[in-house]
Image (cartoon, rainbow, N blue to C red; front, side, top):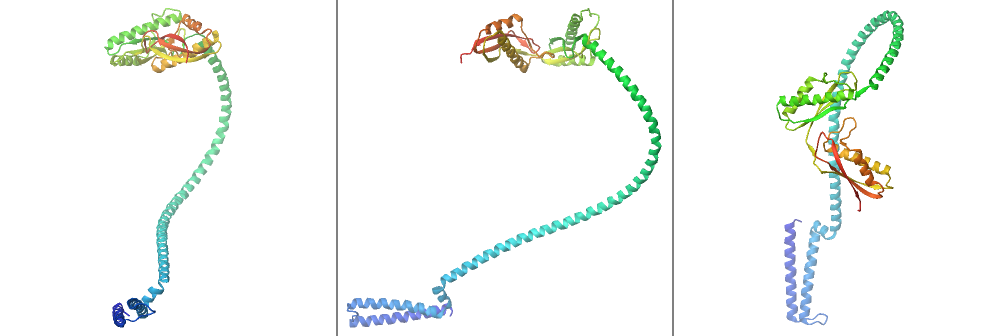
Length: 396
């Protein structure tokens, strides 16, 4: 039955039952009937309620009799819901399987395309390898021909090799004899050079500070004065007058140094150093070294301070403590810019009297002490650094 027909039947059935109930209630009310001993008014209410129940029951009965869908909604809703949920779950699983199948299909398609590309590449490689194999085969043929020629040449050279071996044995004997004589000459030369070396390689012969930002002529004049000082130092070291001989300085190096100093806005420390070990009587060959000059430490300027723990206050401990402290001072001054001596690596000087005066201050000290160093006068990059050392008891 269609929905419109079902609604029409329900409306007519409800109207008929309502009419019957109204007529029945009216008659009962007029006759003032009583049911179960109730009063007529209560009896009328019960009949009205019963009429509503009958309307509802008949409504559902007619709907259930007229439509399968209504019977399903009234009596099979839970089963229908379970069926719908199972169908929904099956649909979701089917969709997931479909998506996975599509993904696998895409992967398969990609793998297939890659396989096709690999096949094409392998075909090209195979073609290339076949061409290379043909070339190699041609090369093998040529090599076999060359091998035959070399074999013939080798047989020819074997005879010459025997002659060369005999000559080589003779040369080997001669070479051993020459090596012995060379070693004897080398030992003699070392003995001569090391036995009378006046200046060691890298040793400073003379040094000085030349002002920059001046004319080339003025700078050259100061360089000549420094060279004359170097000559005097060499004469003093050799123990003979060399005023008639000049030290040897490479002229391009000399000219470049003069130009650089003349152009520099700062004063320069110039060092004339021995180019190698200088033996008495040899020509004095030197190199030039240039360093920017400035005042590194002012007079009474603090340099460093170090704490030490004196165990017994002996002279040996005091001397070792001062030596360790002077190493730290030397490192600090070098790090700040004072040029060290190329051979000894030192930057300062200390008279023996000053050294033993500090030893006397440390003698007998026990426990922690502090040594502090101050500059004794202005000190530029060329040095030397002169020190004033204070000894204090560490009370902290």
